[in-house]
Length: 233
Image (cartoon, rainbow, N blue to C red; front, top):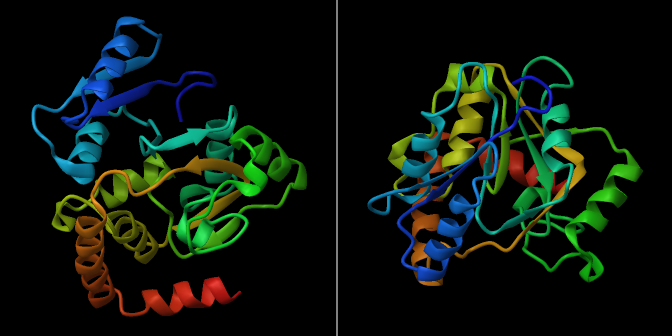
């Protein structure tokens, strides 16, 4: 971790075809917020290529958090994710609860849902923090908002490009870390709103997900049983 209070944000435009995104990020860059860098890929690299490009820009010893563009974080989410990831040795990642996060869905899982009672992320986050439930060990982190321990990242490496443009790549990273002795936790006092499924059209998304999930199960035949057991518990 960097010194307390020292945080920076790296926003990477993966050659978005939406001119509104380009304008918004140009305005963001022009505002020159301290610690904020806006970069633009010359061509669309997909989630994995873009993430690995960002990871290559980390400073020595710097943790990172991968955050999808379609998320809304509560004010202290980053601080609480860092605390969950460093509450003890051997924790590779921490993931918050969300309305759309498969095994970390709140209040239900694994299907996506609207925010509880239509509340904003700050209100739900505050309620979870007040409940003060300790972090829970989970089979894998979820990539929409994934806090990564730098020591684990140094040991495991970046995200494998063998997963194409995305889906299941963060599970592969998490299971690789687990096989090296790390664990993953849910930051149960933290909530992040997630819209989901905005990067691909529905048919393309389902085709990629089906192909990558089949590959994941072939590589880790125990994985689906672990997920089913976690959901049942």
